[in-house]
Length: 391
Ligand code: FAD
Image (cartoon, rainbow, N blue to C red):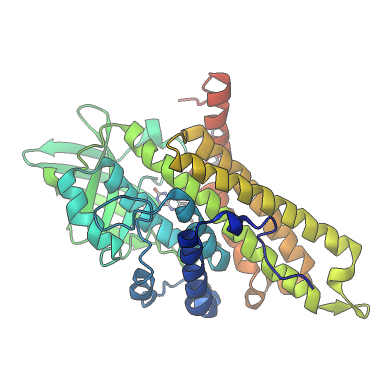
């Protein structure tokens, strides 16, 4: 039988020796350290804190950032890392994406020299963990124009008030990037809010049906005083927030690929073992049709993501490129994981068979970092010149 592998077009052959080395290092770590515990932690909706020091040894946080103790690798490597982590568990890849992409990325793109020097080296070593607070209880997709959290300058401090919802890692993160609208200029600004700040309170969200290992929080900011030195000095409007999202949306597209690949590989393995009517179910034409639909979709989103990361490395990636990839990858992934579950019959809904988790987690990928509709409108605006967003 051919090997069980979701890299049908041998994209790994396109990788440099160094990229391949990182890919295998992350794969081995995920299979040895995360695979055995993922279902249990997911079921209990808890985060495996013991994993962080082991994760840190991989030396991959802030993958593609140059300097400040970061690995200084390329965006293709960053994409492959996201795929490898999500291939085993999407929650862990979200934990990592929030820390390394959204939080470190905000500091890397919008921080002053001093802020980068203070935060990035310790975040690259994962001694300090980050979170990213943009979405609010009443404002999600319309956050660019409708943000309700405010900031007001008061001497050398800024006073923040409002609430944020869905903020991953925020129950234990050392620093959360909080985006707030300036009461004077009406522009969005970013702040490094430390967990010990008395005006900052993070409450764990309960009863999620997806990404249960990720600790999402509702944050309440009550006259939260942040010194001017902790305001992200290069974040002057929502356009700067959008720069961070452009970079991380590419990572979410890769995360979708990993989620799809994990489900496909586990389902394929199962269909070769499971027998009905005296034969492996993989030998039935209708089951093969599902498997081929899955590998077709997986191969197309994988190849698309490779080009996406190359564009990032070439410095030509625009918002619409990242949005298109996020839309298509999360849609195809939803189809792939659902077929993976289907070919496994009843066992497809049991956690122990390692597909059910991907089915649930694909729903979160579909909606976060811009829903399908919002990313579609970003692409629509780029190709027509007309903005269909309604304010
Ligand atoms: P809404 O904006 O209320 O949208 C509801 C529906 O209306 C969607 O289908 C949407 O597409 C549609 N819609 C809205 N406007 C339009 C329009 N103009 N045209 C057509 N359709 C429209 N946020 C953070 O800041 N930090 C995090 O760490 C974070 N982590 C998350 C983790 C998880 C598991 C989840 C589920 C979300 C997370 N988010 C986070 C929030 C996420 O980014 C939002 O859920 C997302 O932006 C959508 O916002 P919403 O949920 O409020 O939906």
